Amino acid sequence: MANFRDIVRYYQPYRAIALFSIAAASAFEILDLVVPYQLGQILNVLSGQPVDRPLQKAIAAASTLTGMPANQFLSLAVLLSLIFLVTVVRAPIQPWLTAWFHWDIALRSRRDNSQKALEKILTLPLEFYDENNPGRIAGKVARGIANHTWIYPEIAGQMIPKLFRVLGIFVMIWLIEWRIAIFFLISFVLIIGFSIKDLKRIIKIEENLDKYAEDTESRTSEIITNIKTVKAFATETQELKRQRSRFDREFTVIDYRIHKDYVKLNTWQRTVVQFCVFMVLGLTLAATVGGKISLGHFVTTLTVSSMAYSELEPLSQLAEFFARRYASMLSFHEFIQQPSGQDAVEIFPSGFSSSPNTTAYKFTGKVEFCQVSFGYDSNRQVLENINLLIEPCQTVALVGRSGSGKSTLVKLLFRYFEPNQGRILIDGEDIRTLNVTGYRRRLAIVHQEVDIFNGTLLDNLRYGNSNATFEQVQEACRIARVDEVIQQMPQGYYTIVGERGVRLSGGQRQRLGIARALLVEPDVLIFDEATSSLDYESERSIQLAMRSILGTRTAIVIAHRLSTVREADKIVVLDRGQIVEVGNHTELLRRKGIYRRLHSLQETGELL
Image 1 (cartoon, rainbow, N blue to C red):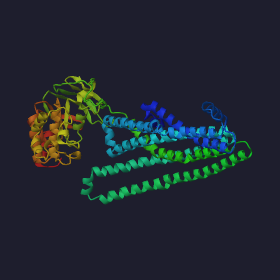
Image 2: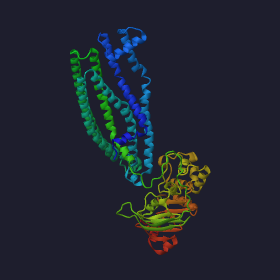
Image 3: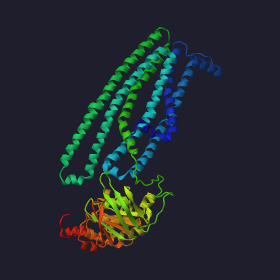
C-alpha cells in the first residue's frame, strides 16, 4: 500500500541537491526579514532613538574604516548598505540557487519515473491487462507523474522556505518582546493545526473522487476504442446519457463538497488571522507605550508579524494543491508497486537491443509437453495431463472447440504463465531454466488480430528485428505475399498505416504479421487463428503464404477452419483441456471421432 513516504522517495536520487536548494531557498526567505528590521532601525535613527547593539558595533567599525564620525549620516549609510546587499546583490543569485534546482529536480524525476512506469507496464502480467482498461492505466500514470512534477517546486520552493521564514519571524519577535512571540506562536500553531485537520478530511473525499474519475475516464476510453460498435448499434445517446450522469455526480462532489469545504476553511482562516493581527497590534502598541520596545521595534514587530500571518493564505493554498494531488500521486505509486509477472523479461534501460547477460539461443525446434496441467483458477483446470511431442521442422495443428485449451497451450509455450504441473521442453531443456528474453527471441507468433503500431509499414515489419536489411524485408514480404499490397500503397514501405493499422484490411494485417514474424527468423513459428476472421480470398492468400513457410521450421497452427490445417504433419484434437485425437487429416477422418464431426459440420456449413 502506497503512503506519503513513497511520494518523498519519488525524488530520492536527487536528495543531496534537493536539500541544498531547499536550504538556500529557506535562507533567502529569512534574509527577507532584514529589510523590515533595517527599516525599523532607520526609523530609530531618524527619531533620535538608539539602534540595536550589533548595529552600533557595525556603525563603529564603519567609522573606524572610513574615518567618518558615527553620526546620523553614517548610520543611515550602513543600514542602507545592508538593505542593498540583501535585495539588489542577491537578486541575480537567488534564481540559480533555488528556482533552477526546484524545476531541474522535478523534470529529472519526471523523466526517471516515466521510464520506471513504462518498465512496469512492460513487465506486468497479462492478467493485469485483462482486468484494467488501457485508458485507466494511462490516466493513472499521466496524472501521477504530472502532479509529482508540479507539486515539487511548490513544496520545496515555497511551502518549506515559507515555514522557515515564519520560524525566523518568531525568533525575531522573541528577541524584541517574548510575550508577543508566545502569543504569535500559539495562534499560528492553532491555525495550522485546525487547517491540517480539515485538509485530512477533504483528502479522503479527494481519494474517492480520484477513483470515481478513473472509472469515468476508463469508460470514455472504451467508447473511443469501440466507437464503431457504438455507431453500429446507434447507442450514442445512451452513452452520452450515462457519461453525463457521471459528470454531473463528479461536479456535485467537486463543487458542493470539496470546493465548498475549501472556501469554508479559507473564510475561517481569514477571520482568525485578522483577529490575531489586531491582537499583535494591540500588544505591540502597549509594549511601545510602556517603554518596553522602541518605535523602530514597534514597526518591525508589526511588519514581520503581518508578513507571517499573510503567509498563512499561500501556505493554505499550497496545502490545498497538495491535498488535491495527493490521491493521484498515491495511485501512481500503487501502480508502480504492482508485482511484475512471472513472464517478465529483462528490461535494459540503456537502450541496447540486448544485454551482455542475455543468452543467444539457437534451437532445432523440438518441443515437448510432458504431463502439463494448468488452470487460471485453482478450482478449474484448462489443460489436463498434456503429453505432446513436436519434432524439428514439423507442422502441428491444434484444433478443437472454443475453450478446449488451444491458445492456453501456446501461452504456456511463450512462458506467459507457468504450468501448475509438468514441464515444457525445447531441445530437451526445460524452458523455465532458460533466459526468458533470449528464449522468446527464438519464437514468433501471428495472432488472429495482428497488432499494428502507428508508423510506416517498414517500421512495423522491422518491429521484431530492427537490424533487418531492406532486402531481408522484401524477401519476407514476398514469402508472406504482402509485397503486392505494399506496391499499391502511395509511399510503398514508407506509407503511414495509422493507429492500430486502421488503413489496412484484415487480410493485409495478417500477411504483414507473417512477414514481421519471418524477419525474426524464429525456430518455432505459431499461427494463432490466423485465418478465422478473413474472407475466402484473403484466407487463400494466407494459406499460400503459410504453405511456403511450412517445413522450413517448427510450426504450430491453431485453427477453427480445418481447411487451414489439412496439410499439417500432425493434427492434435483437444477437448475440455485434454488431447483426445492425434493424426494427420486422412487418419482422423477415418476414425469417425471429434475431428470428423467438426469437419462434417464445416463442410455442410452448419454451426458448431
